Image (cartoon, rainbow, N blue to C red):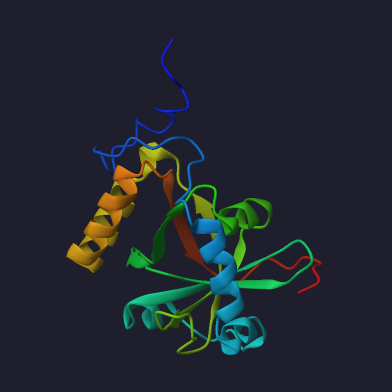
Amino acid sequence: MTDHKAHAHSSSRARPAAHPVANRRLPAALLSGQIAARVAPRGAREVAEAPRTGSVDDILACKRSLLVTYRRDGTAVPTPVWAAVADGLLYVRTERAAGKVKRLRRDPRLLVAACTVRGKPLGAPFEATARLLAPVQEEPAERILARRYGLGRELFERSMDLLRVDMGYLEITPGAWESRSTSR
């Protein structure tokens, strides 16, 4: 029997050189995530209360996007990311065990806005839903992100591949949330 944990996502065709270990995170990811949440600009937290008049075109005009996901208690959690657009959908690469992925599994609704590298919003957000792609669905997302971000992103991704970090892709679908009772 092969080591299932070591080759959990080896069937992914998106990054053939990657051989992630299931649930492996970037060694400092937890600490850096906590620090980033504390130093995120106040405006990033307030994006959850802003009018939802933003659009995918806003994302195309900037290099970074702010994803706002929600904890169980309704607290908005902002995360700046690289995002690329194709056919009206957004794609983001992230650690499979990241907090935002856990929150999106529980509630796929999020807000998206253009932002600075530090997460300061550059405009109004829009509503969307997200899902984590299966490894066999990742190749188009990788191509789109690679085309948009080039060499800098490729160097970052190679380091993730070498560290065998368990990375995946979010597919984000813009659109108004269905009405349902929430604390938001």
